Length: 215
Length: 315
Image 1 (cartoon, rainbow over the protein chains, first blue to last red):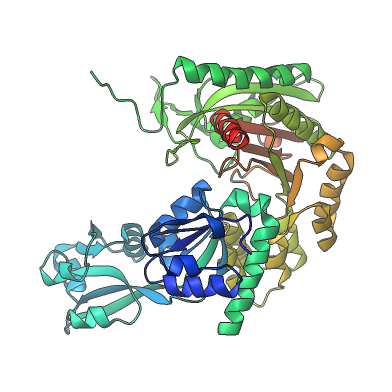
Image 2: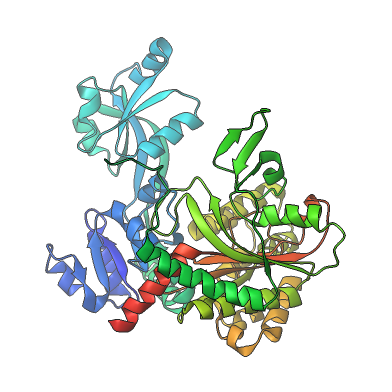
């Protein structure tokens, strides 16, 4: 059914449910499921990529629509994309966590040193949160496991995405604040949203129906 | 030796310049034939004059002159032309027609098609109310795009006053109004739907701004904005009408638009080539209350779309 639309599909945690949804709306994903090295599936109009690359491709029009997490869209809020539909799957929370204990090390750092150091893969979201709550924060951007940063004394707090909280617990960290919650979203390129309005509306309404069946 | 230039600026060398020049000359011919006299204005203006436009796009680059006055690089050409109309044409009989090819400056994230210094081509039609003035602007716009050689372009047409009127009709409180308008401007229909649902507001506030397509979408709404758009559809020539697609959620970034607004779209490019609309209140802020309409096109994006269309045609 995808027909004229190119769809950006996120690899990683959202992949399986995204493919299930595409199957449910009549887009054949068998080839995608059978091949985790290939990136472009021209026959069914699917391109696969990291979730954080989806807004880039959709904004530039390299894909007409895409699926990615709200956490990614919040972090890249300067991207000119249309947020069309909340797909409901992939729920998770953006949180502030510190080492477990009675005293919150970030509050302690602020009280004595005036600045809290915060490790994250989401520097804009983290900076906005601390700014909005009137606290001075030094944002330390890391690429790998964020949980390591407070354990080694690099920072007092982390801002990270968590679904179950298991990784945090296993590393002796505790959630101190919730910044926001996130689910998967369908986004569209603003030009395609108008020039391919009928196809995008059809896809949206099928996805809405499929979502209400599975919910 | 490599000597750097500022982020968001670039050099244009002869091969590209020839192509850009072909585009601007084609448009200049159309503007000229239609009676739109070309103007130049200072690249740098007093900031308080630019701010009088309340455009919502603040100047990104400022300097002080030798008397300590703040001057700024213009973020668009509409405000400088409004200033010209008020100061140099204070008593001239409207309508007034102006065109320009000029660089403007904005503090954007630079990417191909949007530098911080960028060349705009456009017209302003002052003293011609809608729908006739709007019809003329759309007609000149299509002629200019045809002259450039674009074949696949479309004009998305909406109204800046449509959603505010809808909010008014449903008696939406001021605080909710701000939230809904912000969601619409961010093109975030998920947040729009959430806010409308949690506040118990009518579902039309979510449905209407997502209406896109042919004239039939106007059957879904009533009121002055619908008849304003209908009047345009009724009066534009057939070759313009076939280019129009309605978009009832169209919200352009600049704050001065009052009625019909439009974006120029091309399937060969992921972002609009330009756009425009009615700004019936702007001239009053400069002391010469006249209705007006205009458009601005990004010359770089016209060039990119042209190249994109050529690629598709030869593929």
